[in-house]
Image (cartoon, helix red, strand yellow):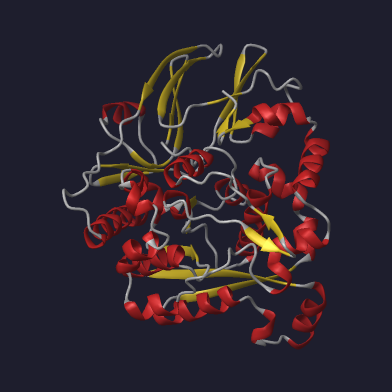
Length: 420
């Protein structure tokens, strides 16, 4: 498992147990297992970005970052447990928890007078801290998933100031008929690609960073669906569709001979922090609905949801690609924002938009459609609708392939948290 531990002004990916235990505060993307005598010490980051489950079988503790994998050893699923995110858990070799302690995060102090400018500066400084930590542990080269929207553009912009070599990855799905034309003529016709993809390419040119396009046939959505659901440990349409996109990125990146296990960073999580997710409408039907109106409640619901689904790290991890989410380090800033800030529909642009140059901000597609929806025919979502694979169908596929039932699914994830 790929980790990034941040403590004060230093960062680590590998540390001794005694060193970690001396830390009063800890942050980053991590899930660490250390063994001392007959005890296991498990540290999980506060947002639960890195998953870890455990099961006692024949007196032995078995660990896995995938629940489904362990479920093959416990048909009842009653004995599989998830380690608590944001905690140190000490486990005996017989599976008895002997101690749990909440891990302290570095405190974030909001200024007395909150303005878009000073909050923007706070966000920028903390994301830079994350990126510098990544550089010190993984080297001077990084890949950025660039969608053409504000969140990923900020990550690419800041990374370009810190890393010696940055490569932007952008993905575009092409429907089957057009894909044949695309292959036959090796055509760069703009009509083949999503608007977001074209914007991402333009952004990478302005930043002076490399651009790696990943073009895939919509048939791949169905071809890889079962594996994607296994790796993401999810059946919920929004997460599955995101995971399909990440699977195509990971699969194609791993095939690239130039790729040498450099870390991949994404702009994920910011939409959760500002409660920016909205439903999508195709053929007068709504998808990805969240029936919570209050912005603060919706924010907490979405942040809790990060503890479940493995739509990023689970996918990239399967291909041995280190993946990280720099925005994870700023969650408390947005959680502590006054409600009137959060209720502003443009809060993300008013705050984070100040981080990048105005020229870049003007190019960004402010009304950007989600990457898994963009493209001709509604993108991945449109392809699923065309093939009659809706939320109910995904549940059936998940249950049939992984031997679960509807009753179990109701208890598996509640408000975004895995079964205890």
